[in-house]
Image 1: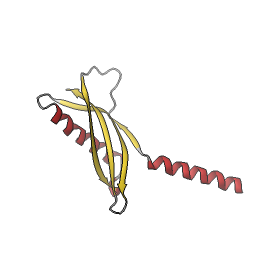
Image 2: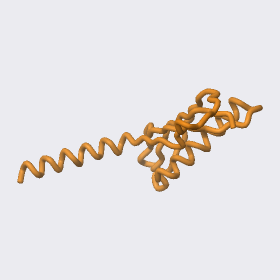
Image 3: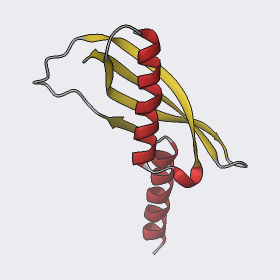
Image 4: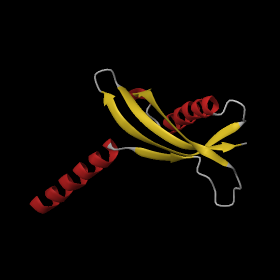
Length: 108
């Protein structure tokens, strides 16, 4: 019984550590896509804890990265691919979490 309880405790602790260091990938380039990569962009953004769904984080990362890409390349139609994001920290008292995202800027 003690061994099963110990194993359960290890699983719970491991899961909580993995969840606390949440990362994600979004809009990855496919191997057969022939695009011109112009560089990379990076941004940080906040998400309220009650809206911390992966789809919301992915969308917010894309919107912020695209805005940065358009600032960096104002005369070119651009898009962002190979987006990766990670949770950077949070303000548990106000239920806000800060994320950092990076992505590759491609020419449309």
